[in-house]
Length: 387
Image (cartoon, rainbow, N blue to C red; front, side):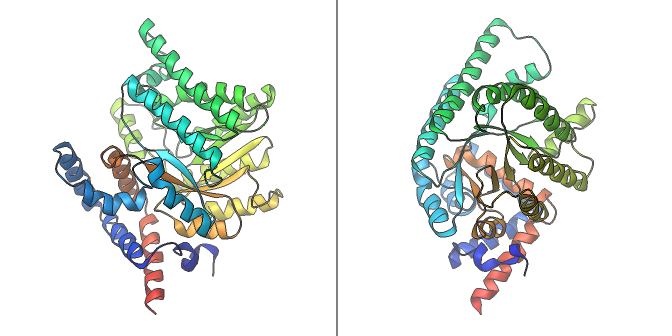
């Protein structure tokens, strides 16, 4: 039996009722029109303040999220760590907030999570989104090389200060910080800022991590250029490598505005791009890799590369990451083999986390084979338990 086919290990933490709920949810997600209608109805119900939060919480929220607050997530975190040897990354999943007060709140939240991480071995990383700390339009202006007004410049200075505060605290507490990637038309600004942060805080090891979305055909070149810069300036590179989360949006905008889409032409090209990025990182020193992947082939490849380059399974420079509620067959089976594995654990008020959950469901329907693989594994385990 191949490693990721072991459903006993994969679902050892799920009760029979949790297993049934997971099976039901992935059955629903498999039906694309159902996801579109469900998303629209949910958005409407939340905007109209209809009392559906209880229903959402007991189904999709509890499956894909850790809780409504950090404290609320603790039982999930401790259970995964003590029983499955799987770590957690607390992900405060609020999207689309645009006021200064919410940016300051997001910083406070990250600083609180850093304290949690310092106290708990089960929380090896902290994470935030660039737009959690500042308006999307500011990043976009820099990316498009447009000048700021004086008030925008002041606003941007506050964004930069938030980034520094978070990363300096991360360095002091010795907790690596993952910074998520977002849409291509704002990403250059984030990249430039994160490079400055790496140069400042990654002198001795990787504390600040950027994110590469490998469905973009330009990201491997970007990684190679960054490696040259880091080698010259003498700092470490931390990188979370993922396939990407905004594909439909990216393609639609490129078409609408008449520029070449930044997205690879095919799924196969994306897969090759991803695998080439992890190969490059494993071949070069002074790099730390957080491989965010739900792809079995890429996971097997990374295991082989680690062996080839004599990197031990539990070397802290190499982590595998999956989203909570998905790909347990990868997470728990890797952890059983002694690899470092972390689940991204989203949390926040039900209403505020819904945009994240809707995106998750839509992504699952668009990734061919992902949902059917989850369903087949769940079905196998259900049958095994019945016998």
